[in-house]
Image 1 (spheres, rainbow, N blue to C red):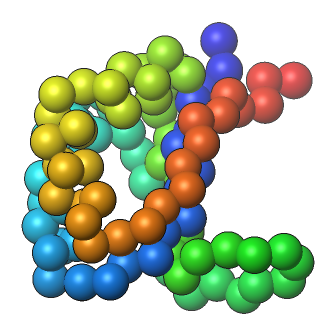
Image 2 (image 1 turned 180 degrees about the vertical axis):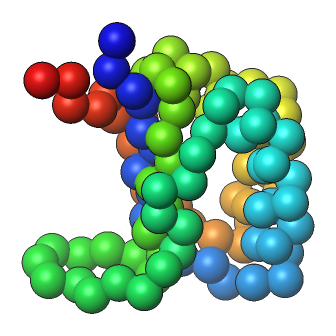
Length: 97
């Protein structure tokens, strides 16, 4: 079974409030076995368009990644993020070949 990943591109408009989101999402991520691969590090845009921050989170499975996103714990954290950021997020299956 392949691992699942969240790949997100985010523009943050209020870093102080976004920090509260980061604290609040920890419970959901721990519950669903999330592990950060990329967490807003320096990036170089080479093609197309992106946002200011890139995040890649690994989960034990695609199902766990979906369940985490839909969980009450994550949705409560997301409610903090939504007013102060714009995000594009996909859940993708890892390569298992």
